Amino acid sequence: MRPRGGAVAAVAVMTVALAGCRAGQAPGAPESGETGGGGPALTAAGSLTVKGRAPKTGYSRERFGTAWADTDTNSCDTRDDILKRDLKEVRFTGGTCKVSYGVLDPDPYSGKDVTYRRGRSQVDIDHVVALSDAWQKGAKYWDAGKRIALANDPLNLLAVDASTNRGKGDGDTATWLPPNRAYRCPYVAAQVAVKKKYGLWVTSAEKAAMRKVLATCPHQKLPSGGNPTEAPERFHAR
Image 1 (cartoon, helix red, strand yellow):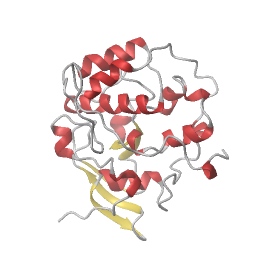
Image 2: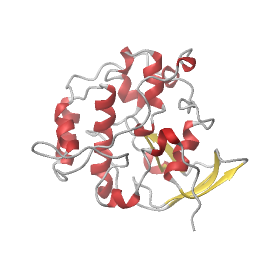
Image 3: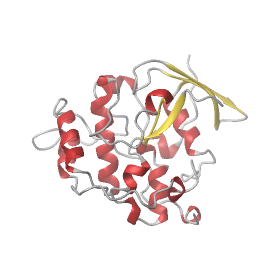
Image 4: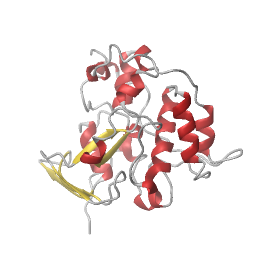
């Protein structure tokens, strides 16, 4: 028997089902039905606004609020919420928030099993749409509440192998894809879902890359759910 963390209401809709990933489905809540000439992810990718990448000037992580803010107010920080959601064999320290141990089985980016132990760096929580990329494609012009929401939205977060993730940087679909080819369709679908939800634009090269990947899995569904696109007022001070 593999103990899991307690259900977290605001992130339950984004529970990662590994069987679904192996079937070509992005992690997510109940997903929308297929429409038109392709699946929802391919259709949504085609609807994204295309613009040039804006300058990175003014970007800092602090523009997106304190890291791992408890924006869903469940008394656990966002990082631990995602660890509880994505890891197996979860163990805790001092209650049911602080995850001390778990296993990525498998890690979606590399396809290998990765063990998480608190205080070590084998597992990252990745922003599927990197915050710097978001800044250059619309987030620069948002108010603080929307940027904080994006940084802590379970729809945009995924526990992954740290060493693989470090190679991504702030890349978009045109510049980086997971080495694990079996996860590329779910990964791109997740990026499309986040950009559509928050109204972020894409470059022409990025959109072409998204459509190229999703054309290999034309029935790929689009993940949904996550948190509201505006963080609670008390987080806006930064």
